[in-house]
Image (tube, rainbow, N blue to C red):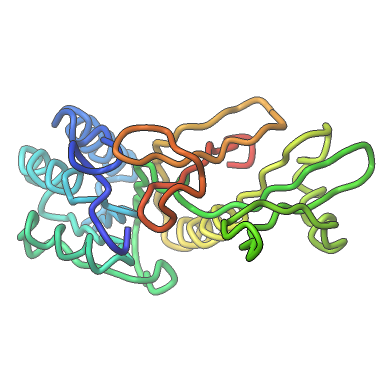
Length: 245
């Protein structure tokens, strides 16, 4: 994300906003209905997390103009850390209602609607292997002898194990995925919603029933590749455990 645009035919994968405007139109209508349900406040903020190439934001702006009262109250903040993607977004979207932010913690008013289209499945995770009563954490290391990157399991930290046990993830043997970064974001988002009112709408590949397996995947030019293939230039993703959400 820092080096290139991974979206589209010439990238690594395609997301829903690139397939049809209908996706953005449906999300906009949901946002309008949500705003109405809040009592039509005179200000409503949409925060899109990981706005990609800006296609979804552009569709939301275009569709919002059909709802004049909503559009008048609307401000959109794009949470983007990649300067590469930010420049692409700024070329695609030119509207005074748009503001780019680099921290969710700096949001100081609301109500706020948080949107995330394939945002959480792009965040880093920790993987563990539980065998009987022993728990090992998965690490990445570079083998000088073989001159390649490999995975390595080490005995997991006891304090980390306690933290993960509270989430009830260690019920079965096998690979356990701990989305520490997603949980961190959810805590920030929850605090903002409690303080300023609002909601969260996300779209991600994931599962609702517990499963102890490796969901980490790497995609390069629309094909699944080895995790260590072309590191830093191929998309890496994992599935979301919706039970934790």
